[in-house]
Length: 412
Ligand SMILES: *Cc1c(COP(=O)(O)O)cnc(C)c1O
Image (cartoon, rainbow, N blue to C red; front, side, top):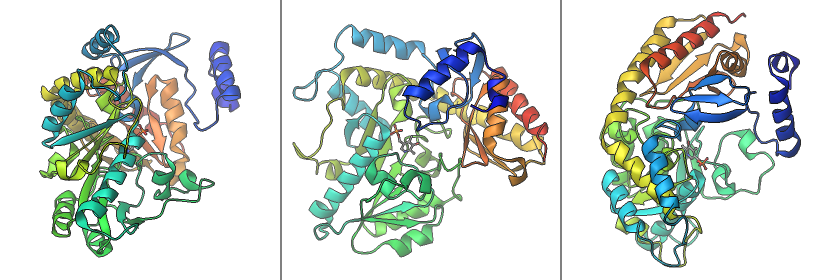
């Protein structure tokens, strides 16, 4: 820990972080706060200091911490049954898959746990569809992906990452992926050949720093995929469930993908729940024994997921995302700090791009943490804001004031 940081911390917090550093594998560089309790948009650390959560676990907490309806659904289900495995049927499975198919305007659902597993499942289904339905020669299937993508951390998924830190030391990699620039529909057209089965894309790139593609991009991509019999796979793990102001970001351009990959907020911030949602033609290639997961579709997760869908169907969160998001972006843009080169965003989701002279964005996030605002840097120069969609307007304004003030105080 740097001295400038540790000087601001209590002995209790330093001891907790040191224990973590000693026994926890060092695959994260967490901000120096040890959170113990949480409610709504607010969290409290082990010293009793409160913070406004302006990150919401990368959108897994779209409905806030411990939403009463979600907690209720989980507690009630814990009183009935937590796990049975799919060796037998369970009473919630049918209701969950039918409701999620309906919400997505699709035919079939395959539930998994982490987002990365959802992506893996979609890639496997797309490849198998390529062989069984499209008629591609064995082991020839190609999937097109975008530069600066983020789809998770498994070996196959990092195989097509363009982030050196995600790949270095983890080879050999899975072949069969072709990379094109994000936001460039012509590049997709040019990348497709007779072996292409799918185009995997985030409708808005989250981890890359909230990169919103040019208007019409998804529509063009949809047309190109349809014309070439290539599956459009939308990774809506971070964009889904209201973050961009619609239930799904594809709806902003009236686009229906062939496959949705969902995760994060689907589990209500309580459980890991992901799902692949698609047509019977595509998911129907998954015959018994070809794919599975012990915890996939467990009753506890499905009970929470069904309650998440109930919240989403009210439209309230999408509306808050649009209204509060417009306010957030307007206020950030009008603040016009000389240290900010760009404010990107959509819905209640913003990426603040800092000029190179002010050093890593992490420093600003540490300063904001000291002021009681949790947010996270990405790619060295971007501060990402993604508060829970239930955040109070005054709390949001307060956080924006702190962000603007912290940016104003920057030297360089
Ligand atoms: C977070 C994320 C994933 C991976 O989800 P995990 O639950 O962390 O495995 C995949 N795709 C996108 C777009 C994400 O934001």
